[in-house]
Image (tube, rainbow over all chains, first blue to last red; front, side):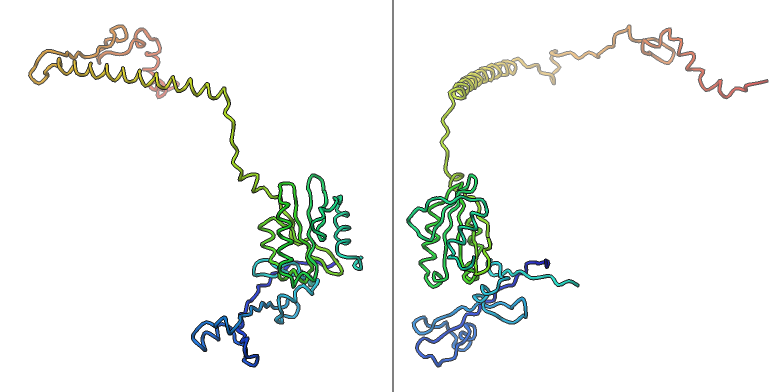
Length: 91
Length: 224
């Protein structure tokens, strides 16, 4: 039976501003929006979507936090961290 | 096993742990109740369809909260897909257990903790013990008597002080009041010698002669 350990991966939150009136408007991060327009987005026009991503423990590629549940190695989410089971490779 | 509905799988999971199923409360179809030793387990199951129903999750948690007790352990069972959206820190801080499942396995992610807050925070009104009350009354009377005695002593001391101040001798003017005499030792304890008085144990002590010659005989020649 392979030896397993638990790895902790921090969650990164990216707030994205979406224009609800014009679907063709490119999405901006909240930080970029503030820098570009010099103000916070108007709630009646824009909606802020929080995208939570982590780096995959397998291939180090970004993945959505909501995708973690598809992996059998997913253990739990606790605070701003995701815990995965990981096999220890024999040296 | 995975083809069974999740309610049946959870039932088998807890029965395998040695729990006994209790009759359902009837208010919630997705809720199961078990008895494990002295503990009562309440399990509320969230399915994949509940992910999009925010109120369904709220209802499940409030339903569990109504069963809070010292000997009750609460579980939320949720699909693994929903597990990434549920912060298990919240479950841990409130003592609610979390079980995640998928087609292959059922896993207890957070263990429930017994809830003691209500029993500890309730103020307990202790009935006074009559023995303690009587002892307290005795102590109180003793204290008041001591206070009176102390007042009398203080009054007497003040009057004595006032009298003594009125009759105080004037030492600076040379008025005879107090005479100081040197303290003399009893004569029986002193032995008069040429160097002065010695203690009584020196009188007729044969060891004095031996001790006075000590050291002189050691330097004397042994032969010739």
